[in-house]
Length: 337
Image 1 (tube, rainbow, N blue to C red):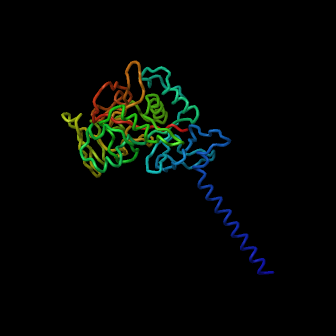
Image 2 (cartoon, rainbow, N blue to C red):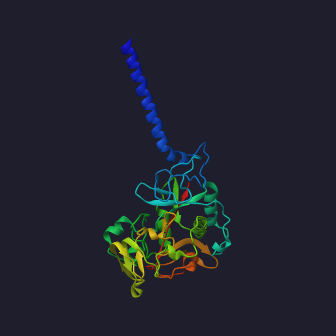
Image 3 (cartoon, rainbow, N blue to C red):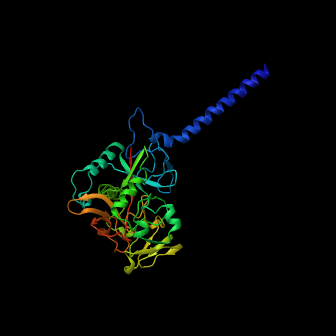
């Protein structure tokens, strides 16, 4: 009887341990599961509880945490939640509470079209969108094998990356920037990638403003001619004569940017970090896929040779038929499916 009782006790303990372990494992997975799965085929994503697309994982940062609060919402939902795909590309959740933003942020005139409708549908269904944490970086192959960059090396079709310390994919035309952005997740059944639109830029600006960031003085967080900061990464010195021809990059460790303009690699300094997104102002000018009757296709984001300030961050500028330049790059956004 004693042996039988002992055996029964052991079985109960083991069974209890298995149940407890299973519970803890499931609880550990809840951060991803609770936020990403649909219930009864109904999307449960909201601006303060974003959906995590399959194939991506949560990334904890010092700024924003995916840890759930008492309401089962990520604690860092408004500070720049980061997700990462299987090869390390990172994106940040941009929550959009309302599409009614400050009128002063509308610096372009655009009628309702497919691009605008898609953005509004994404926000209405999911409560926001994911934006590349970094400016589009050149492909792994390009970074490993090219020493001097130009339109000849860069104005091509390829797959960009959104990773830290990558050489920005500049010297590229709008046509190829758009193709490359869309090709990043071309065959993915859970997300669609695209070139950022002017409308999405407006929502990003509104979000920054709502979280207390002084968007009227982007010199506080941008790589401009008159800013100075410590950084580690690749840099290319500005040369007016070779501006449209070619650039060579060097690597510096904890270097002090002098007053001469430099184009720097993505995420090389926390100075340019706003809500976990790097280089929203300064560094390269970023193409958008928005066509305006007043402007034609527009670019946004400022440029590292400009003087810091309100205009260089928020104003759009026409692209026209310009040749691929050192100053022009791009950024990818994700649309959830």
